[in-house]
Each structure stands twice: as C-alpha cells, then as structure tokens.
Length: 410
Image 1 (cartoon, rainbow, N blue to C red):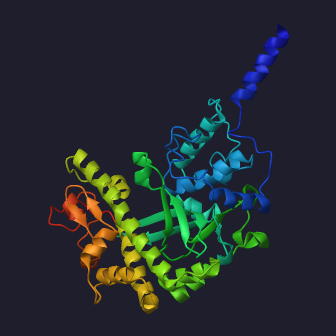
Image 2: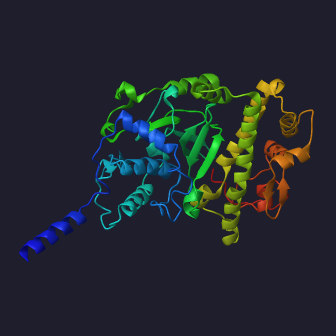
Image 3: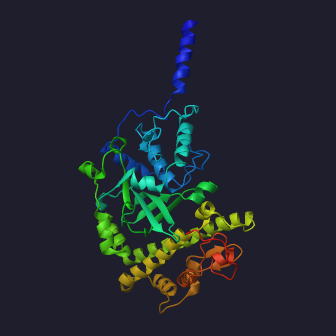
C-alpha cells in the first residue's frame, strides 16, 4: 500500500510539472532541411487550425502567431526545442519555451501545444518576430519555411505590420504563401493560402526575408551566427538600388529552376489580381457585417485595425501595377490573343473587350452586382474604393453610398 501511494505521488508530481513537450533532438542543418520540406506538404494547409479533425484544432492565430505556430508544430512533432524571446523583457523568464509547465493540466499532448501557442499569441507580435527571433538571409538561401515580414507607414504615425510564411517556391521562382490576419483570428477562419502571390513591400531595416534562430542561438548577435546560417544584409541594399518591381524580379530569377514564358508570366500576374480582388469580397464583407452588427457605431483602434483594408487594398493596387510593369516588358512576345485583349482592356490599351474580362474573373459582390477587373482598376486609380470599415458596402466598392465621418486611425 505504501509503495502504491508513493508511486501515485510520483505520478502526480510528474504530471503536475510536465513540459509542453520534451525535446530529445536538437536543431541542425538536416532538421532545417526537413522543416523546409515539411512546409511544402499537405500537413501544412489553410484549415490546420479550424478543421475539427486536425490535432491543432482550436488554435487562434494572426499573422505572427501563425508563423510561430508552424515552427512550433514542427518542433513538437520532431521532438525539437522551441524558444523565442520573451517580449515582456524577461520579468519572469528571458525566453518562452517548450519547457513551460504552465499547461500541464492538458493531458492530451496536442491540446497542450494548442493551449501553449494560444497563450503565446497574446504576448508576441510581428515586431518580436522580426527583431528578436529571426535574422535576415542571403537571397539565394530563401526556401520554403522562410518568412517575409513587412512594415508600412499609415496615417497619424500608425504602422501596419504583416508576416508571410513561404509554403513553396514555384519552378519559375514565384512564391506560394500561407498566412493569417487579425480578422481571420477573430472570425476563426481558414488561413490564407495564395499561390504565386506577388510581394510588394520592399525589405527595410529588420523587415524582409528572414529565418528563425535556433533556441541555442537566440542570445547570439546576427552578425556572429555561423556562416552556414546564411545571414546577410544584401536584400536591403539591393532593394534600395533596384526598387519594387526590379527587386522582386531579381529574387524570382535568382530562385527559379526554369524560365517563365511571357504567356505564363502574364497569366500568373492576372491570376494574382483575380485572387486579390476576389479575396477582397470576403475582407469587406467581414467589416460591413461587423459594422452593421454595431449599427454603424464608430470603431475604436482595435476594431479598425482588424476590419479596415488599407494594406490589402495596397496589395491589390500593387498587383495591377505589377501587371502594367510586366506587360511593358513582354507584351510583344505574348502570343495568346485573348490574354492580350484582357490585359489591354484592364490597362486601357488599344483593344477593349469588357465581356471577355468579366468572363475571365467576375467579382460578384452580393447586393451590388458583378464587377470586372478593368472597372476595379479604374476605381483604384481615382481613389474611389474605401478601406474604412464604417463605410457602407457600396462605398467600400466605389459605388455611390454613405461614407463615414468616423476617425481614420491610420
């Protein structure tokens, strides 16, 4: 009986002080390669956190949270350590790690990981991700699993930050990205998975192509990291020298394993515009529905930050600008006549066929009608699309409608 009591006491003590997971392995170049390969598989998908059959169901993640979560999930599944800098400044611990015993009430190891990451998400952000836990890399080392972070200025000294994880790199050097947003986190929606998505915000200061530091290297200055890590500041000087279109074209050419034909290039850029414009339907609807649920009451900074669309609208505008740039480079080499007419119609060229453009990518907004990509571009150019979540649905799409007097937070 005494033996059984002692065993029970030891068992309770072990359970009470269990870590999130035990790391029996250590990060290495081999595991980094496995992480990159894992990112390209079906194990990493848009419904990873919302599918009830997923072991990680219930994880709520915005952009930075999702980047951290994917790294942590791979670490957990491969018995590797996970550690990031504590944004509180180390009042309790300098790092947040898988050794935490704060989640030992969850007997299921996957639920323990989800609880750990949900808690993590309340304290970390894109600043922490870019400044503390990752480092900038040589452009020829960019691979699946590499992050791309950016920070752009809004109005009134406010800023917008975002982070993508590169899920795969197409043979032509274009990126397939997986990422989340604050609206996705709040509404518990699938992550965004965009194939061939154009990057539009140039690297600057600590923002750009970055990789995670190993837990054992968090305290090491970036400049002192081992040469094999591929640390480099080259992207920043190149971005200043080349500018937006030329820089990202340079990166694609550096990473490609096969050439992209003019037809394929223009088709890809058009598809990116179609994806961005179609995705805007959902983004705007989220804001309009939330606005209606509050009877149009002005949103505070937090809600505005979640439901406004200035960064997304900038990405849509930039995708059109990428089309104009690429068309100027290869138009004479495009042999697909319909493709040429679609581009010419959108950009206001010599050949016009709005029906063909509408059939190519109808932007069907419930309650308003269906727009073509040429119409959307004209409205972007004159500034009639609204990013403000307190505006009516019609105003959000550049139609006549009520525009709010509520504060523009950035």
